Image (cartoon, rainbow over all chains, first blue to last red; front, side, top):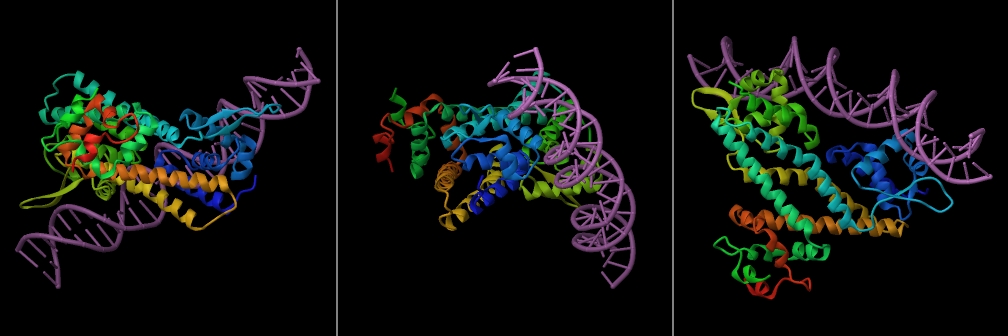
Length: 183
Length: 183
DNA sequence: CCTATTTTTCAGAAATTTCTGAAATCTCTG
DNA sequence: CAGAGATTTCAGAAATTTCTGAAAAATAGG
């Protein structure tokens, strides 16, 4: 496994960013290595390339699999597991967003609903604040669900529509009429 | 500072979620407390309500201020600092997204550009992958910038447009003609 | 420019997370 | 179904992060 300076720097960066992204250094590094590798890699190759223990590699790969961020491949005549990242970057982004939503938002949404179910707690301000937060999260996750439903090329188109986004909604705050009529 | 079961549970939840959100338990709890409090609170009140040390409160507040998530208030005739969260939840969301972008995405975008500047590194696949990732991040941050530019009521309208989002982009992948013409 | 009050800093303690090596488990293949 | 190879588990070590108490610094009011 030749590791160019480019690869090296990219790996170190992902390792450092790991903690901000909610993963640890090793997991970030393993991901970085796989991301830039044109070929699937096995655990031993990763272990050697990163200079970590074999068990750490195993745990890191397990973590990446729990995030659905790596794919398992097999090479004929070789019993070892090989790992890759998807070729399609949009697939990666979709996975990442879906997983972060699941881990960072859904539990809170559930908790807010629970708290509301428990009924009046004698603190009107807090209750209103919780309801408002729940509604806002529902709105945002609903919007996300809509975007997630789009095929990638449409999503790209929407995102690159640029300045015109503002125009998608008319001044009165409604969807523009021409749109409302479209099927 | 009366702390109802509702408040208690909310605070504990935010404390537990803290690590997933990239803050620590104390910071999460302080924020939760301020978020549900109709009145600004001073450091001592927070310290007592959460049962933590005064210095920990100080550090937590400093951290929240670095995130721009709390506002400092003063009460006439009282020299202590009082803290609140903004009333407007959208303001909070905007701040949160902006800060996370700054901490989690911008450094990587900078690094990717740096790596590209360093010129050919003899690994075509890795170079192409890095360029592709950089382009994708630029597209997404550009889209974010567009949305961030919208006034809140338009943003809400856009987000609640629901199923019609898909219709904003026509089948050929372009913006629908009626829209393209609008100023 | 004191003094009382409030806030911040910081070194070390406590807690948590990450990492390792060794052993256990799994799984192909002959 | 034995055994070689591959992977996972896990207890403890190492590293990192969080928290505290004490001391220092900042600030307003007299």
